Image 1: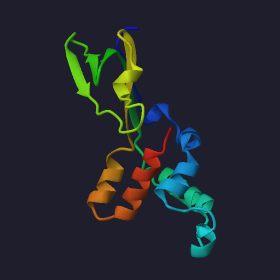
Image 2: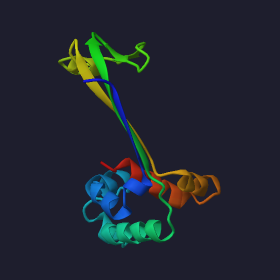
Image 3: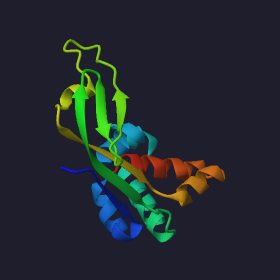
Length: 150
């Protein structure tokens, strides 16, 4: 497989479809810290909160999503992952070995002729502006929602 990059912007991703990719379990439990009966104790319904924020994001046009992902030729070499760039040069990532029994390293999962995928996702400048202008609660929630998009 040759190196390949794909760009997707907000026009290609209707918000109603983006919400389907959010892992709510991760959002509610890991990011928002709402576990088990804790939601009842503090009087928060995470589903209702999610619905309110998703409507606000849509109504105020807060998201300007952009996704870039690519596939690159690579090879694993001990603790190093050597990735071929577009110009034929190689960039090398050096990963630590796990301290667990098998002492595995990310590069162990790649062969001599393999492919690696990289991705970057953003919700856009509007959310960054909200954070910068002191509306941190909104910015942080939007950032967390973006992190759990799958």
